[in-house]
View 1 (cartoon, rainbow, N blue to C red):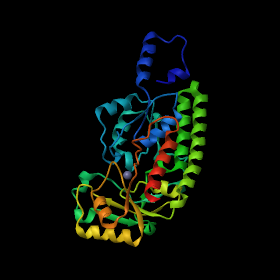
View 2: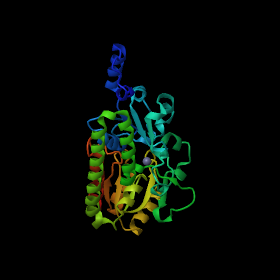
View 3: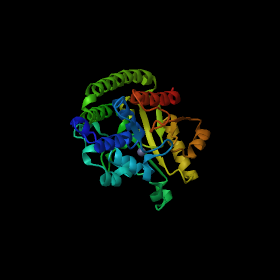
View 4: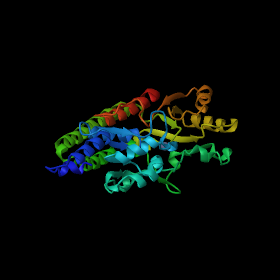
Length: 323
Ligand SMILES: [Zn+2]
């Protein structure tokens, strides 16, 4: 639709004009998950609206598109998604309904150097599938960060916690938005400059804030934080992936408890989308602090500076538990 803007004909018919305004009222950037919405809404501030598919409280790993989501896709100016693992719920409908020229797929961005991507265990939190497996085997998978390295590791796609990658995504988005809204070129450039400036400011601030807790060990219950940990030199001892629907047995609990004591763990991080009951038992048994990390940033508002705010919000969550 925005092609109309770039070559706005002087004798645009009334019908075309009506169609243009009707459609543009709904048109916006849509992103699969909120953290990508933080990037998009910073760059598109004053240009167009940003909407997010996965709602507050839900996890992208087991989200399914609703008919109203498909409608949003069809009228979107631009779609921003990762394209691997995390937001696969979008794959089918995107292919069917959206012109590829309107889509930014982060996983295929040639601007992102391979060495910016970290490896990790490929995880699907598709709990329906998990139920078909042997629970004793799948219920708790613990992997030690220090043992990671070669076999069977794939890219960890929770890339929105990488300030570097987010910067490249922001640049790409600004380019694409500029070609769709050429009359807003200056504003978009200004938004991008502002994005980069606040990001680098926030980066230094967070580094300073977290420096005193860099040595403190912690566990997470969802391996979503690798990029943040590496960006700010944090000491994740490991990740437990626990099926939240099945209470682990006494033997598993004892194993985790042993790990916590052996590694002198300072904190266990739960998530609003995913809080296994086991955390309470571990807290009671070991006295270890329990913190909360929200990889979707539910409480952070979209808009200018929201990505920097999201990083700061995450840093505060770490600091409050590790300090
Ligand atoms: Zn995840």
